[in-house]
Length: 256
Image (cartoon, rainbow, N blue to C red; front, side, top):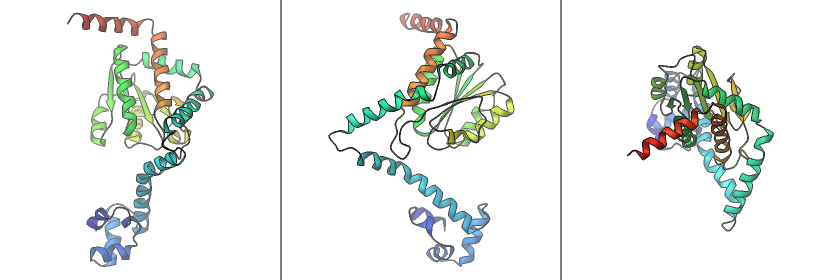
């Protein structure tokens, strides 16, 4: 049955137990037993989970298609720039400078900043890692498989801070990561484009600003601006630590 599901990932999730068993050449009851061995209450629950995952997998293509439908080939750049400007200008309606100040101050006080990201937001993770290290802060990157994330969480302490990036849908590993920081009594910061993504989490600090129409292709322009605001505010509030660290970096580079 695994072979049937893998060979036809688009249609197989919609098969009934009888249809799946028929395609696999087994008795219909085998499909039910198969679902239960995987931890589901029955085949109906298993099928629902498969359909849900199939729909999630198709969402990126649907969002890209909707974006392309709104712009012909001669105006894609102009339309994109216009939409990004609207989204950027709206950030101040969702996030205040006081919130940015609090996030920056929290980061400056951390023993270590753990940066969590999956998927496209890993680009932001790398940028934050570079700039926080240049500001003299210790960082740990959390991404990839559950095992890799779990290994990165082994040394979490109460004085550490989690900086999590989560957009559009909850990324795998976020719940595990958040729970470890909660158990350690450490502070958490989450940057997202929707309150819905953060409903399961009672995060210490949340910076939320929409990136545009949810059903369309979205860029990282808005969260990038938020992250840059945090970095600049950190440099302003940390008593010159960032500037001293950057000066030291420049001295080391010149000495080569």
